[in-house]
Length: 171
Image (cartoon, rainbow, N blue to C red; front, side, top):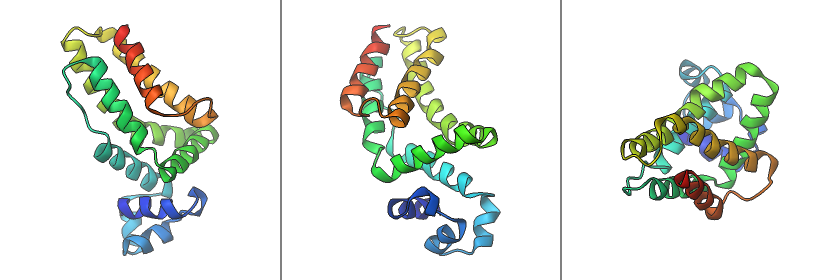
C-alpha cells in the first residue's frame, strides 16, 4: 500500500491523492486501507518514512565528515520530483494545521532524525562531535534542507550536502 501511494504520487499532484485512489492502486478495499491508516496524510507520511529508510542508509565510513557526506548525498538522490511534491505538500499542511504538524513530526521527521542521530552518536563516541552538539547538528542539517526545499533559496544538491557535512565536521 505504501508503494502504491508513492507510485500514484509520481503520476498525480498531492491534492489528487485520495484514499480511494490509493486503495484501487494497491488492489485493496478502502476499508482495508482505513484499518491501517485514518487519513491520506498518515499513508503519505508512512510511505515517505519507508522510502527514506529504504533509500537513505546509515553509512559507516569511519569519519563524521564521510558519514555525513554519504548520508546527505543519499538524501539528495532520494529527492525525486514526486517526493519533492509530497514534501512541499506536507510542509504546507504543517504550516496550516498544528495537528498535522505533530503527525508529520511524529510519523516522518522522527524517523529521519533518528537515523541521523545514530550517525552523530557514533561520531560522538569517536570524539568527533560533542554529544551536546548532536541535536544542533540535526537542526542544522534539516533546517537548511527544509529552508532550501520550501523557499527554494538554493538547490538541494551534492554541493549543499558536502558544505553542510564539512561545516558540522569542522565544529
